[in-house]
Length: 331
Image (cartoon, rainbow, N blue to C red):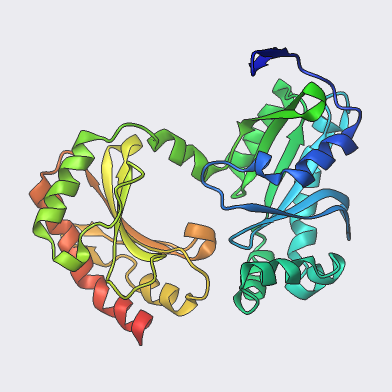
């Protein structure tokens, strides 16, 4: 399909080989980012792994999560046959490494990035936590997607707790224009996409009620995106917060506390102790997988409840958790 740019009609062009597509991805890793991702950084091409052989491109994001990229062209029959094995081989091999081993393999590129980010102390620990937990993003980058490959990748995404993606990158004008298309995206992105819409009046009504009845310090601190609002004590890190979440698919409002930063294992232990605690007639749910195993607690309240009743649940949720959380955060 042709595209028009600057009044110029451009037609899709074939890549010379997989190496050409690799080069573009390494030069422009942003092609593989979705709207939820932090910045991607290119680390190396043709990385030799213990069992999986050579990984085409290795990236890492600002959060310290490794990203394994396998490049396939549609004319390569391996695009269907080997993709499943390669995904798990990459994750397995990378998870056997620690920060220093991976840094040595990359000739110090991780240390260089940590210095560039001004985070030489914490970055190795953060990367190690991703490596040891097997939390590696895997991206299959292709020139064109066929139905079989989409079906396989969709199946893996649904059945495995992995962030896997299938992205085509179409070449125009001798590579001066590159257009990515996401065929399979991460689970978190799907929930984000479902909620990226005009604000839900039912949700907005409760937010207004909450802010007019809660303490000044605990009023919500964000207006975007449209499907959640955060609040916290003034002296907490912004990545440790309560959240009111519009769960449109189940027609409910979630009242939650999130840990979205590494280094808070003790806090995770504290919030795990709230599991099954009764909040009126609801029980707190503890989710230890949230945000790359950092953890959250939550209750879900149907839209059908009044604002006053949802606020009552919210207030009790806060009252029963905030002191212990604050004590752990602030000592």
